[in-house]
Amino acid sequence: MNAQLISLKTIHAPLEGSLSFFESQKDIPFNVRRIYYIYDVPMGVRRGMHAHKALQQFLWCAWGKVDIILDSGREVQQYCLDSPQKGLLVGEGIWREMVWQKEGSVLCVAASEHYDEGDYIRDYRTFVSYVEKGYWDETDK
Image (cartoon, rainbow, N blue to C red; front, side, top):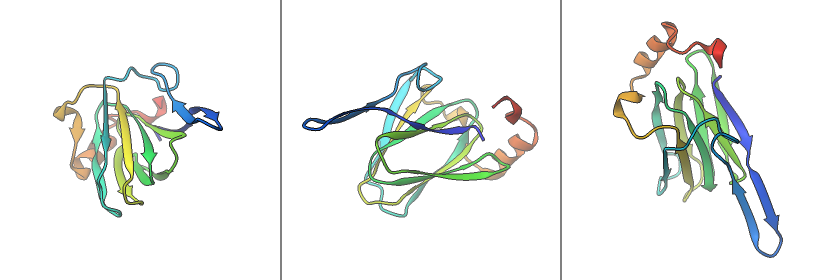
């Protein structure tokens, strides 16, 4: 699957708190062109339900707990983002769903491209059709 859980570099200072970070082209394999965050989502709500043709993303939960369900069209994996010290790198061609597991959770996303509605696949059957046609060759991942 075109996804990877990453431990973020973290500096702990007992009296001052912690600082976690990642860098473009070092910790994640793309330059960040857009950052956004999702919040005020009630617990149990499912968001996402789409794939991207070319966009790559790095997701991390700044506070709270969000489950990320990824589907390559051939396999499904679930990840729990429940610490600001880890993040999830998600490549193109992956169907994603996010489920809020804790009230007040904040999910942050760094994206490889500016917003482009044409990059989205919002219908699951269309997504599966892309996979079956070999749109994303998983042997390259």
